[in-house]
Image (tube, rainbow over all chains, first blue to last red; front, top):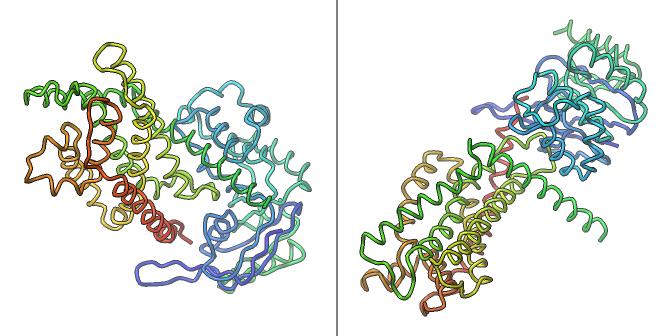
Length: 220
Length: 264
């Protein structure tokens, strides 16, 4: 379980201080399927994702995490463009104490990368890089996955394949999707929060969260 | 106890993984990879050897010029590379996706890659010098290697300490790498021995820890050379002190780097 208790994060820009998350509380269960977090522009969605990924530490409050958390699925940051596909997979397998050969085989199968394993990443298309980083995350079997705006990436065929894969294996993991698009949340999520004024508002149903989000958006 | 062992094991895995990536990045950055590294060391060895020959010193205290300069260059190289590469490791952004990799892990992995590379090259060079008759047998291999390791660790310590000033005053990096390192290469005994110095300079020279390490290395390498002025306590104090201070600087700097990192 991931538990956020009165978590606060602020940033300084010059002399001005901006409170992004203020005494935020919330929790995410293991094997909870796809959970959405709706938030307007600059509501602190990326900050929250960075916090959950362990890239930021809260300035106040407590973040407890039992279980492994992935990197942001759509991010290419885990990859190094000057290394080959094989070397990137080997590095990540070593980093997460996974079987190098097992991960190599699983990723090549899932992302269909058998032909490009020994090519440098910077010689490959963006789509192939996206497939690699995405499938690497899935094959490592984290307890929690983080998605910023998009739950699937890459070309249409790959998106379709992954949407099916995620739907079929949804109960094996928790995917936390942050977005400002109610349509995306409605399409993928079973449960949703709304991030507003640095607070996480909880709703039992996605439709309730979307209604509240739209009301807040209109009021703004 | 189990958690401690598990944590230590995971930490070791992280270090091994970062070392693997650092090694690939290091050779990938240069067009000729390892050959370019060897080439730049070879150029320095040749230049310093010629300087010594030009000064009319071919053999002194029973030390032939080529192995003499090689010992000095490898010791200096290990220290210099630490100073140049460790500070940038602390602000490296390429590991931000991985929360388990701390800036200190990157710094230590980079330092370990440097040490393995240069100590490996040094051993091969010393062995080749013996094979082709440019050098007599190495007096004490263990001591020579330990002194190279000490230089590497000293470089890591000083690199960590300098990461602080380099972070707040970036121009200082250029000053240290171009100015201070050049001066150090001339005064740390890379191409001379302590007894070669004029007597009025010696009281100042004994404060330079690198000069102690160089003379210790030459005593270990050349059985015919005996020195009686170096202090192991003094050198250990410098290495330990720089590491301790460096770790404090890294911890203080970690928050400052993180605060700059992510916009809302």
